[in-house]
Each structure stands twice: as C-alpha cells, then as structure tokens.
Image (tube, rainbow over all chains, first blue to last red; front, top):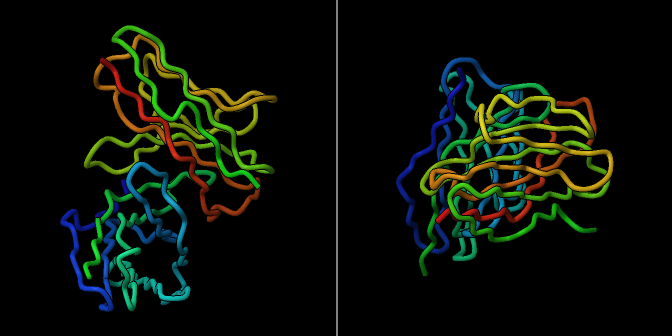
Length: 112
Length: 116
C-alpha cells in the first residue's frame, strides 16, 4: 500500500530564511499531493495541491514541487516568519472519493 | 459562512461509557470524513460518509465504533464502551459534492476525547 513519509524531526530556522520540508512516497505516484498546515489544538488547514503532471505550484510565499522520479514533493516557505511556525502535513489521495492519507507531519519553528 | 463545526471541544469519559462526537459540515458540503490523531502520530482515516450512506469505513475499528450521517442533522461518531486507548483527538472534515477526487478537505477544530 502507498506510504507517505515526512521527516519527523523538527525543523528550526531563522526568520527570513527559506524553509524546505520533504514528503516522500513509496510505490506508485499519486495523482496529486496536498499540503496542510496544523497549529496546536486545531484542525489542519489546506494550503496547496499539486498534480502529478505539474512540476511546481506557487501561492504567495509558498512553493510546492513534485518529482515523480525521486517520488518526492518539496514544500518551501520563503522569507519565513515566526507566524509560519506550525506542523506541516503532506497527504495524497489513495481511495475513492476524497479520502486522504496523511504523513505524520514536520514541525517547523521559525526563530527571531 | 461557518466552517466545519465539531462539538464538544473536549469530552471526558470513564472506561465503559459511551462517547458521541458531532460534526456539522460546511454549508453545501455533503461529504464527511472522520480522522483520529494520536500524540506524535499522523492523522488516521476512519470513515467517509455521504448523506445516509457509509462510503468507506476501512479505517474504523471492527468493534465499538460506528458512524452515521443522517439526512437531517450532524454526522455522529459513536464509540461504545470506551477504553483508555480511545483517548485521542478526533477530527471531522467535509468537502464539496463533486466527482473530482482531488478536492481539498475542510477540517473542524476537533474533539479531544480523554478516557479516565
């Protein structure tokens, strides 16, 4: 079955730097990947979706790439701010309807 | 435009009691999903429902857990005879009724279930 793997170690970066988070998948390439942000005690919030035939997708300071050769998606936050501190989840659709399978998430901390 | 509403926000139960978690999807959404999140673990899919139908319950434990989404009213996740291992955050999500399989999910704030 398909697995989604994210680096479980927290990522600490300085304000203003670019944060890069990794999402790896096994087996077949999913038709799309989604990225969500989750704050403590809250539900995930959708950020970006990238399809298999798209190399890159951007939204303001966010950028997502999809490399089917490496079986990997990278999530970038440029000019990071302390308010970007949160856990970021990668997810793919693996079943009927919109059922999503999530990775365990990577915690990002942006320090002053 | 209210988002996905879950209640209660926190629920405390003693072992053996029943827990009922409620979820009202966003207006216009007819697809509901329930996920469970344990500390240090990812979101685990439990069940996917449309109005009056269970579409996929492959993530539901075989016993004690059930879900419904009636024609009128919220979706209910019911856990009978709770055990300590049921303690977790339970999230509900909803999506629009489209045939495309890449719709984003809108999540509620979750119900934190604590079993004493």
